[in-house]
Length: 357
Image (cartoon, rainbow, N blue to C red; front, side):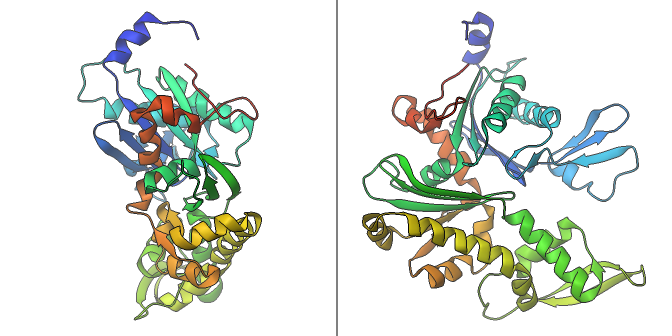
């Protein structure tokens, strides 16, 4: 790209930003400041004007409560951009928000964004284009498992093997890493959102109770689990009875919600097992020492580490602050771009290096 003196000048006063552009939440890390934004990836749009009404947390709070002329959009689906224009608006908002305290009228930051491993070239290009269109002077891409592993403090650059399971809202990323590369990986579109749908469907089938995704998410975090709890928990859940059409409250136990989540949890377990089956015995030996690291919001599901430990016969542990691992790991690239830049990926097929813009 040709040298642009205006971008260069504005860039001198702009920030270095790492973004975890998630299906459920978008996290923004600013170099030297840490995580400054952690908001839901939701946007409300005025249908007539095609203008955003609210973005982030404010937009999510409007779900199920909007009038007919306002629609709620989740621009990221299954870890990739589903609504390009809306994603661009959301990114512009977040980039502007982190520059609020600066004197730059038109910020031109350098931006690194995490991507699921299974994305197509078109999906990769869409993320890059959206970041550039939102005002970045340089956009760089990194695969989310690599970023999560860096953020979790795994020895990614060493000969020893390590393994990360990054469970987000739309995707679960499983990767075995060694010598700065990926030895084996899996990407599946079963994650937090799918678990929420499991709970919605379970309560519908068992109690004829209709609840929203937001309520299902609350149930998941409060009493959801992948392993028996000591003691088990009970929660009141409010919704609409599908037979009478009237409001109803039912008591639901953690045992029931664990049953509801069985299918999704088992898919994740099977995927981890598949990845383990593919790797050399030397790396399996390394994992017996290091264990398997859980990252992403889904890692906070109660009992998931214990269930995986039980199934894999390996120690499974949750990273410190697992929700922010991808954003923090991506931000580490800025600290030593010459050395850590090898973890960036390119737009063209098969590329492992990406410095554009």
